[in-house]
Length: 389
Image 1: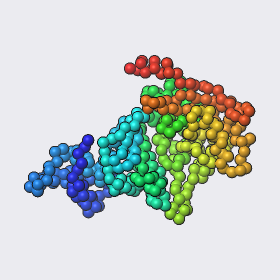
Image 2: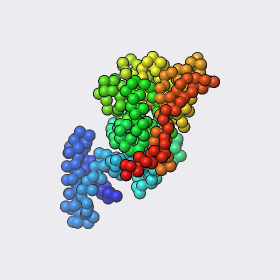
Image 3: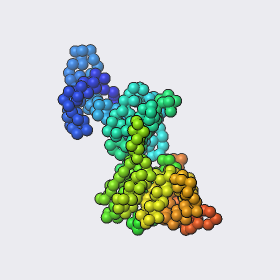
């Protein structure tokens, strides 16, 4: 692990940044120069003042920069491309996930350092967390998602989750190479996006739904206008004609909230060739369904234990929008509007895979009927992995 920089050095760097008016977000070079100056200054006077010299100046400079411009001791894990997620249950109980597997890291903070870390993360987001707003979802500058819960909602300590943005899986080809999507499943999904068909991605938490949805959007034709709506920015999408929108929490006065329902309605006024909803979990399902029924292709994720359960859930969520919505309208609307459902799973070893793709074919006996167009084959996957090795 990188040795911690002496607190006096960190404070001197902070003081100089303030005094010299350096904006670390715009002038990283000036921050680096100041950090190097102060580390060398420490070593120049260390022995004369009875202080311990810094052996690894370069490592110390990195630590100083992480503390004053980055996210302190967590920065090394946030910079590590193999780390998918970082979470803090208590200042001395910090975990990361690599390859879908959790591990505890030998790192301990203080309560004050934890709160300072959250304040720095929220500084540029325009969002807040306090007693009146004890939860916060925010998107960090690199696209990672931050979620924080504070006492007295939690028992004692702040709970922090940082789900990182991993650019390595930005398209279906990279997911095929990683073994998360079989070539035949990728062909189905790529064809659906090119043909303007509507696709629902289902799965449990951490099953890879958002990653798959982002990769599918990358398969859209370049001339398509894509409008995405999310509660908090998570989708990693780079398209020529793209508008990305996120919701907004209410102010201290309880005003100014922007819901997903409002965003879906606004998106339809923006001439989308494809409407993307980051996650459907509430009454916005009705607005999405109405949009699909007007001929706008859609894509979205939904929490479910199977592809068929995802359709059942999507048929139930619109009922939350009001008492005048009934299943007699919703079921056939879902069956005719959703073309494919791709279901993701994460196994005990942490591997994430698309395990089935189904196609709705109609409604019978009060349920949506489907046919399976792709099912994960363990033997075929093992053969591909052996061939790649």
